[in-house]
Image (cartoon, rainbow, N blue to C red; front, top):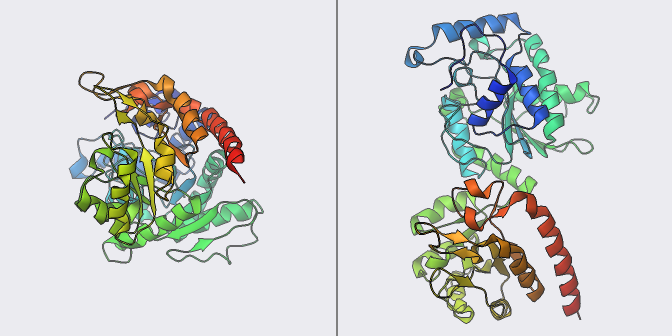
Amino acid sequence: MEKLSEGAHTLPLELFKKKRQSSGGAVLEKNLTVLEQEIANCRKCPRLVHYLENVARVKRRAYRDWTYWGRPVPAFGDPHARLFIIGLAPAAHGANRTGRMFTGDRSGDFLYERLYRAGFANQPQSKRADDGLMLKDVLISAAIRCAPPDNKPLPEEIRNCLPYLENELALVRPRAILALGGIALNTYLDLLKRQGLIPSRAAFPFSHGASFSLPGDLPRLFAAYHPSQQNTQTGRLTPAMFAGVLRKIKEQLKLPILSDVHDISQIAPASEVCDVLQIPAFLSRQTDLLVAAGKSGRVVNLKKGQFLSPWEMSNNVEKVASTGNKNIFLTERGTSFGYQNLVVDMRTFPIMRKLGYPVVFDVTHSVQLPGGEGKSSGGQPEFIEPLARAGVAVGVDGVFLEVHDNPAKALSDGTNALPLDKLRALLRRLKELSTLTRGWSAP
C-alpha cells in the first residue's frame, strides 16, 4: 500500500492521479481528477480534521500496520457512470483508512457484493484501494467526505461538502441517483432546492425502495436503506431487498446483462442478475444445460457450435423450447475450417432465421484464430468490419462485438477485440447499411 508522509496536508496532483488509478476507478479525466484532489485536500471543518488526524494516529489494533488515509475521501467509480450512488460518510476505520469509498468495512462488503451480482462491479470484494476493484456504469460519492465522530456529521459540515457533490453531479451527469439512507436523500434534495429545481423536500419522503420522478431532465431518484451493520445485521436490510432496488435501477437505465453459463449449478445465481443466459458454442449440444436454461425463464442465447451446421440448430432450439420458454435467439460465431481457423458461411443466417427466432452475428469471435498464438488464441481484427457489413447486408437481427479500450491489455479475447474508439463509427455504418437492406426486402 502506498504510504503518505505523516502530517502531510496536501496531496500533489500526480500522486493523487496515481492513487486513484491504482484503486481501479480509472477516474483520470482532467476536471474530475482536479476536483477529487481538491476534495482530498479539503480542511474546511476543524472538528473533522482533528478527528481524522487522531484516528489515523491512534488507529485500531487490527490495523496498526496500516498508514491511514486520514483525510476527506473522494468519489470512486466510472466517470461516465449513469448511476450515481450517494452514501452518508466514510467509516473511521473503513474508507478513512483505505482512501476509497465503502472499502475495508462491513458496509462495503455488503454493497460491493450486491453491485457485483447486479453487474456493476468486476469483483465482490473491496478490501483495499489497490485490490483491482473496478465499477462499471456507477460512481459512488457521499453526503460528507470525512468520517465524523460517532458517525454524526453536523449540519454545517454537510453544507461545506455540498459544493463537491454538486460539482461531481455536474461533471458526471448521471441518469439515476441512488441515495443510501435519509441523510443522503435529504442532502441531494437540499442541493436541488438550493438550485431552485424543487420547492421543498416534502414531496420526496424517504422509504426503502422509493423512486421519484424529478422535474425536467433531472435523473430518476431512488432510495434504499444504508448498508450499515445496524441495518444489515438486524434484518432491516437484506440482500434481496437491496437487489430489488438495483433491479429497478437497471430497468430504468435499460441495462440488460448477458453472461455465459457453463454448468447447471450456475443457472440459478446467474438468473438473479442476468437478463440473458448465453450457452457457449462448445456446450451448445449439452441437453441438461439447455433445458435448465430454458426453465429459468430468462432469454436464452444459443451460440452455434463451431462443429455444427446451421440446420442442426433446430435440435438445440427444441430442447430449450420444450420447457415452454420461447425467448430464444441464435448466434453464429464461425465454423472450424482446418486447424486454428474459422470461416463464416453467409448462408447460415437465412437458414437459421427459418427456425423462427432472431439471429445474431458474433463478429469478433468469428475472426478468432483458436490456438493461433501457441498457448492462446490469436485473431484477425482487421476483418471485423468487412464481416460485420456482410452479415448486416444478409439480414442479421443483431451483432455481437467484443470491445476493449486497450485490446493489447485485455485479459481475454484481446487479439480479436474491436478498439473502443472505433465502435461508434462502426455501429453508425452498420445501422445505415441495415436501414438500406431492410428497405430492399420490405413489401
